[in-house]
Length: 354
Image 1: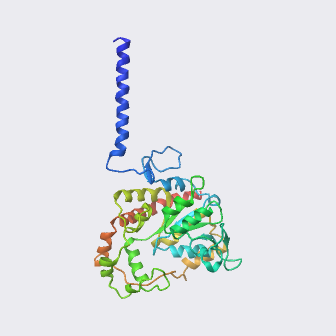
Image 2: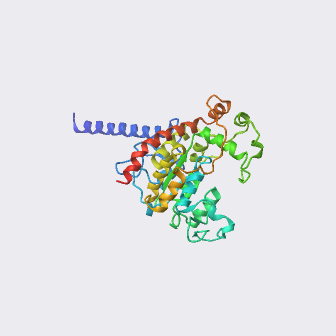
Image 3: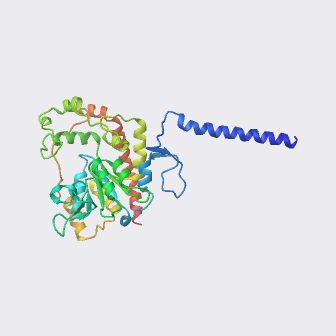
């Protein structure tokens, strides 16, 4: 074979390889999954990178703005965010960190009665003198409040220890950036138990803005089958979708992978251990007198449940359970995934203190 022939064969092979690569590249975007650049992307990680395991897809706002669990926490350089899911123990977590005298961003600091709601910069203040918790003057419990906090530079101000919000995507996407990454945490509860608790609570909670007096004497089977519209709450919040929008299998898979790589998960059924894990992220010394007293107050022998509302439970045989399970299949799968993840993360959190 002469040189010219060899060169021809080599050129042909190069063309074939190039065409194969192009076809593979096109296939990535032409299969049944649609990859939206604005919300998430496919990527391959390398050893030592800040990303998740190879070929995983997670939401880009989490990838870019939240540290992965593989990186040990640096509490003095990071601001943590707690996802407050209604009726899942979030109020108890707030009370614990108020007791521990942390500086908190939620709704409290923006209340007009404290006279800081009109400030043009981030201010941390103690409403009750030199002792007790501090608050910052923004409302991170709602999207507009998060936007306002972002404009004031909540995270970069270094004036808060922990941010509580029911809108994790908004908070992470707007408050943090690649130069100011944070930590994400959350307490989770079985979706059906959460919804049942919500039904009984809002039927009597006349102090809440979302009070539903018509629910007080309503049959829970009727409510679950005809009235309830709070479905797939967790998956929708991570997807950034409204309550009247739908979510699908792709949203669930992205939620699972995002939570696995970026969230320290806690469980309402294991609240004490969950708090210990969060404390490790926050750098809280549990050996101080204040820490011991607070943890004993909530988890000691004489402890009482905060924000508890005694009510009847539902079983898997009940009509209400079946109706709620039918309307929340993705959230239930996400919760079961998180239960397993809670066990997996135990050794990861222990490794932070070694």
